[in-house]
Image (cartoon, rainbow over all chains, first blue to last red; front, side, top):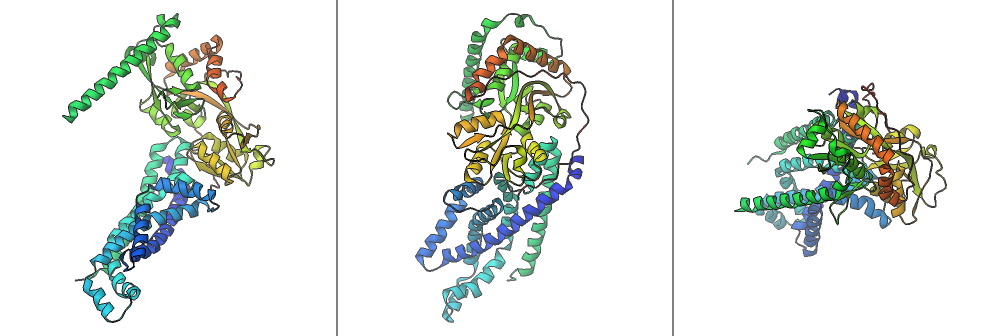
Length: 214
Length: 308
């Protein structure tokens, strides 16, 4: 493990990039997920179709393929982002599809009478969603959102294929420059665990705070 | 029922493999002369391989000119493969070679845990690697060069890369060399040389740098889009990796390399492989019979400026 201790800065730098990729990616995913979920339960058929199309295309394409496609493909049509930005967009877009399905299941779990009561009071559909249904729905899906966050942390390692210097990428390089793959990747595993276990604990706390007591 | 079917499949594959093996035997038996009489000390790696009748050799499967799997024949082809065949032939004419794909970072573990008996895979000899494996050879010296767009006139030497975006692949000594020679270059790393070439085409990087042998192949594929700068800035001696401490086997491989060079088989192998991608046959390097382990380079990685 000597090689890990000698290169702690590599692991710390990698963790910093991994955490920023994950947090920014999850923020993008949360916004996309909420909008798409709202589309999928809306009374307007075209919106439902768009939401369904989004989920099916993003959810069913491998992340590595999306990453390379966005990085190299978009430049062919004149759109260019740096590697880090591309990674945030792709991770956010991909995870957004899963967040959308999670939130949709939360919406469906809210008793129908809640929405009916809100509509009979004169609230519009967006108002009903924003003030009555979504607040209850989100509270029930904290645990699955936590799982998605952890999955995203690990998925962020795929950004290495487009040269983003996150944890797995830096571990890979360190393993090559020192010819000691086993201790280096053990170090990387521990660093990932530090991030994911912390995230798991944090989501657990949030879950208990906002739980609906029925 | 399924198990029976699978057993049948395994048996038929084994039969086919056996048939291929005997094919090879018949074609190579014509050159059996002194080698057939060679005997090895009991307990040596050579004796073990001869007794087993097969050897596992780690090669690249994706390196044009050195080790590349031909999709139509399923055979691995290239200079590394030819060198391996020439060496193994000296152990015994009927020794069958199993080529095992060994990507850069698998080479040391594969040698250490016995997955392969030797590695001939564009394997640069250096002191870090000598801590964990030993090297016969070198059998070839590649030189790191720079590839740019054909219209580019700004890059004339490696120092011109300072402050520029440069691309190379992960797990290569090319990265270390370019950082040493152009410390402020912003190095982007991909998994494959072709992705680097794509980034060069897109203008995300201004140059791609790695061994001239690899760049030559890329220039040829680019149909005029790229050119070689022709300002080599490092020597990359390719060695044959063997298990650390197996000096008997290493000396055996070194002796064979000397023979191969003298007999002209080295030049012939070069012309049949790397010569075909437009490289002129160079002087073969002298084998380096080093002893002992060099002092370990510091394990701290150099500070870098990799883009996030």
